[in-house]
Length: 165
Image 1: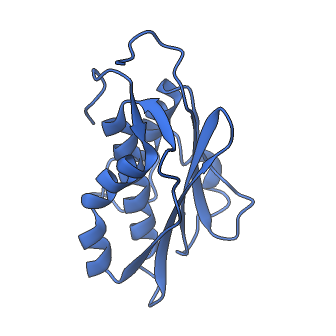
Image 2: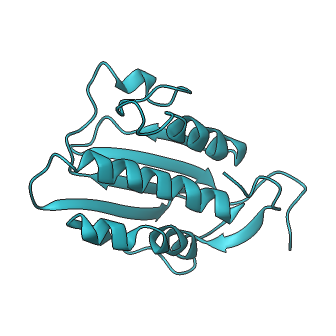
């Protein structure tokens, strides 16, 4: 995926999300998907490898877009970020077909996929999970929400020594 050798640096969440959206917003628009970007506080920062976090967000957005292919209209993806003290929560929610209950426990495992053969290797979510865990955080499906919601919970500061000031 790239960025694994980059140092951890302070970066605004808003900029990380913007970087991800630059790679997919036109594709979303072409597929009739509305993007709902909730207010992300300007000064909300995390120490991270921003390219990697942007790739995780992009992967979650593209998975959400795929979940919307069976919805005829009023397709949307919502991105939100919240400050919860020493951590930040970023959520990506879609109003697609949802994730079958029997599949939910497996979706973050390597090589597990619900895609058709040839549509992808099934590595996106497990690699994304590994990236977030490498940042001291966690990636999970919030099963308490009405719509499919993936949560990135990540610390604002890293305990590692390879930070750039």
